[in-house]
Image (cartoon, rainbow, N blue to C red; front, top):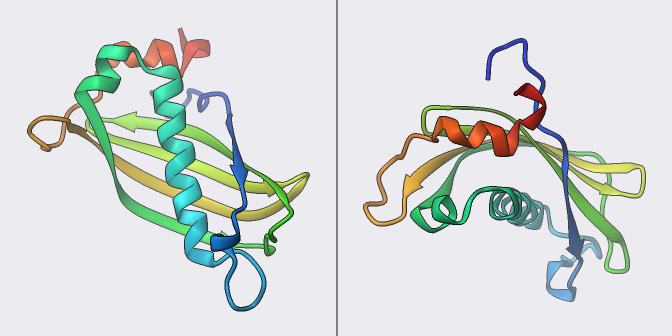
Length: 138
């Protein structure tokens, strides 16, 4: 994707807040948000990528930058709204909002490395995937 193209459409992933997510202060532990981002990014991949790519590739997180805005609690209805901003080579760059209704609970910028499922070595993200993840750019 060039610098002038738009990111992909947002992908919404529902989140169930579990009792184990709650810390000693009565709200969701900060570390749990990163699990939610991982769950959302992987669900996005599994929802849009062709079956042969899902079977032959895996993802590892390279970097997360998270800004916490508000706490989440046990009874909250929470979603992760993730957007694939771009991919280049073996790297994909995502922006994810963790939300409760209109309230943004956390903002996360993350980068991921695509790996070959057999060799566990970095694998270039095929250009054919642009049509699945950035259909408006076609």
